[in-house]
Amino acid sequence: MKKQIIDRNIINQETRTLKWFLVLFFIIAISVDILFNFISQYIPQLKGDTPGKLIYWVYIFMFALIPLAHYLIKKQKPHYIKFIYFISYTSLYFLNEVVTYIDNPKLYSGGNVIEMFWILLSPIFVSKLFVITVSVGLTLKYIIVGIIIKSPVALLGIVMVALLSVISFILLFRFQAYVSAVKTSYDQQLTGLVKGVIATLELKDPYTRGHSERVASYAYELAKVTGKLNEKELNSFNFACLLHDIGKIHIPDQILMKPTRLTAEEYEIIKSHTTIGADAVSRVVGLNSGIEVIRSHHERWDGKGYPDQLKGEEIPFLARVASIADAFDAMTSNRSYRNALSIEEAYKRILESKGTQFDPELVSYFQKAFPKWKEIHDEYK
Image 1 (cartoon, rainbow, N blue to C red):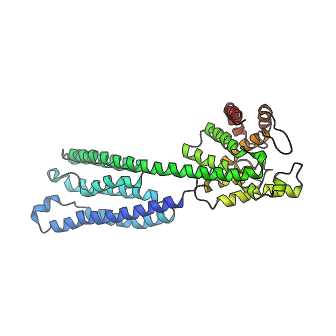
Image 2 (cartoon, rainbow, N blue to C red; image 1 turned 45 degrees about the vertical axis):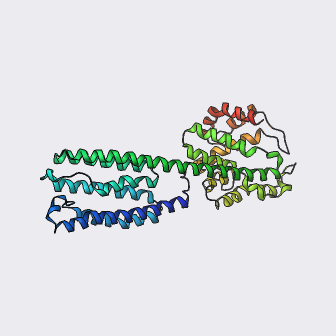
């Protein structure tokens, strides 16, 4: 199963946030540590508060990470950069404090402005994992430094981290609540758009009315039973299934609603709905993660499907799930050329096609999901 396509807008926002964050980090760090260290050389009263013996090496290393950050941005993996910078800075500053104060623990004052910066600005990435990493990382640093240099002042650093972490998590939860509200609104609009497109398709072929929604419901339950998708992936899969026949909008009405058997040429035109639909959806941000489902839901396990004659596990996992749902609903729905089969007969035919048309493992999961499918069938009926 391939990873979902990441929205380019999300990557761009992460990249912009990182750039501003790193600029502020270097400005504040250089101002507080290096500039302060320089000034203290001429003011004896500040000698005991100098940032440490290794401070210049700390920032030489941090600047040396800039090419790596640039590389990760080019590879569309900016989310790793903040972790790399925080872990590097905290580890190096830990060594700096140990080397500086191990022989003079009384000079250790505990805590610095840059660490406050890390804690208070970590929520801007709206990443719970990063906020936890910063809070736990700095707490461990103070604990270990305190043990090594034997300074009780490290407790002040731990208290500071705890208090600022509370503020940081409050900010994070507010950011997450706002993002969640925007996402809910977006999903509702996207759902309305998708259902509007489906309604347009069903106007062309009244015999398929409700087909897309039923297929999406069946496929959702089957995918859920496999346990291989999280909630976000299930929701994305649901959209893909709703649009699995979107390419049929391009099919002429006289072919789509023909009451008799299709000719070979007409069947080839019908088959083109998979590639046409996939191509159309590929241009829509937010829906393009469903391309595989739309293109490959008519592939067969034995390689005799279309459009690419994929075989076995060459067929994308979610397309294999959708193919069972699509076939089941097609069999249990009326068509212009035949009446619907009973759900018991459709169930039997799915089992008979195990290892030929359908993925054998998914057919086993289908048997587990079937009671729920009966409820869905009866509800739509």
